[in-house]
Length: 200
Image 1 (cartoon, helix red, strand yellow):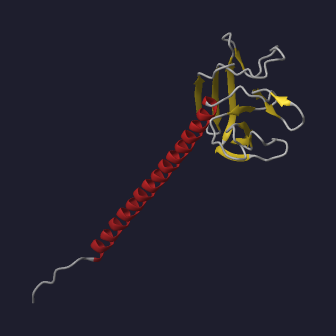
Image 2 (image 1 turned 120 degrees about the vertical axis):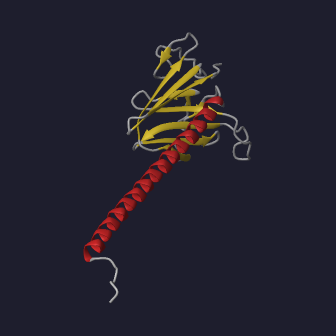
Image 3 (image 1 turned 180 degrees about the vertical axis):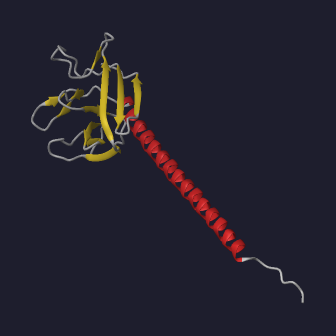
C-alpha cells in the first residue's frame, strides 16, 4: 500500500493560528491607516477654513474706510471702534459692489467671538445694525480667545480703539497697523499683522 501524505491536525491548527494573527495585524494596519487619513483630512479641512477666514479678514482691513456709521439711535459711530468689555470690532468697509439698495458699496463689518465661534456680521450702508440682523458668517470654530492690537500714528500700541484720551473729533481715525492673534481650544494659535491701514 502506498503511504498517504497530508497535513496533520497540529499543522492545521498552527496554520489557522498564524492566519488569524496575520488577519488581526492586517486589520489593525488598515484601521490605523484609516484613522491617519481621517485626521489628515480633518487637519486639511481645518487649515483650509482658517486660510479662507484669514483671507476674508485681510480683504476687510485692506478696504477699510474712514467713514463714520449711523448707529440707528440718531448718533454716529466712529469709523473703527472696539468693545472694551469683550472682543469685538466694528468698522466701515468699502470696495463692495454698487447695487440699487447700496450704491456706495460701503458696509459696516462687525467681528465678534460668540460660543467659541469667530463670527463676521455685516450691514449695508443704508441699513442699521439695531434694526437689521445683517449677514452673518461663521469664520472659525473652537476659538478660545482673540486678541488685537492697534498702532496709532505715533507708533504706540493700544488694545482698544479709539485710543485712550483721543480727541473727541477723531471719529474718522483709523489704526495705522493692526495685529490679530487667534487662539484655539487645542492650544494652537495664528497671528497676522495687517499693515498699510491708512488713517485720515
